[in-house]
Image 1 (spheres, rainbow, N blue to C red):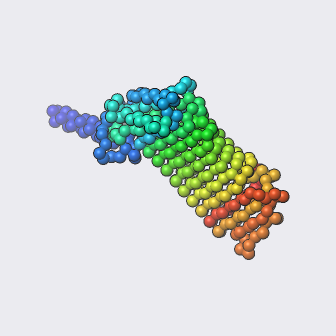
Image 2: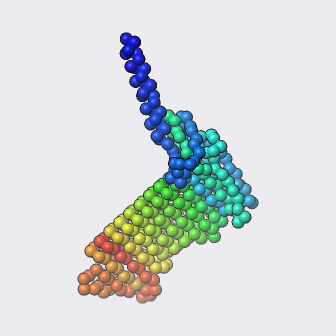
Image 3: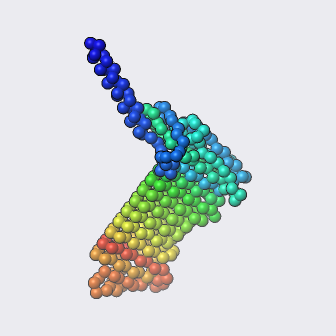
Length: 331
């Protein structure tokens, strides 16, 4: 009887240790923060709470740069004359909190410290660690957001029209809307990029994810390594290329040159019927279909087509694929 109780006790301890080990292995740590040489922070229970609040007066800085290794970053609109950064963290240790520095150029830099957060018995962690940023409307001349393995989300109109908006995620998603700025750059390493209702000189980049845009106005550059590119309600001009994905552009108005390319995917462009342009299309082993085939001149192989569409073809539209199809149609 005593031997059975001892065996049961040993088994219970072993299970307890195993659960603890598994919990520890669910470490919340980011690529930028690294694994070696960084301070450790521990949390029991694994619930992220408001641990730190940073207030940045706009009179002191009208440029904001955030750098984190593994946190989700969310931007919200606010009122007043102060930018507020709230850190929801697992650990209450001062080592886990961000450092703030100010530059002579009016920039405030909020940098997440290089720490490793271990969650002990963190089975119900809720939303997880995150950074909430509250910015008054059109108050900043520059906003730069960067995270190593988290997501970036912003729906706030927080940058001035002559300003700069930048968001970069190493292995997370970037989702941004409601931005009008001189320059807008959204980048994701292995995640997706989603942009909606943005105006300016726009750069969209995803190494291995998809790019999805809607209601984009301005000069656009979109580049995807192995994902698809789809932009609806485009007004302006665009250069877009996908390595092994499809490129689909639905244009409301075209005010400049259009250059679309896909290595092993398809290219599709929808145009307003009243658009005048010079067209050139080339495909390696795919088919080419347009709504103006009758005015195009094809080479002997039939894989290169060129011609003027309309009375004043002062803009260029080019489409190129390696092994995919090309479709240029009117809306």
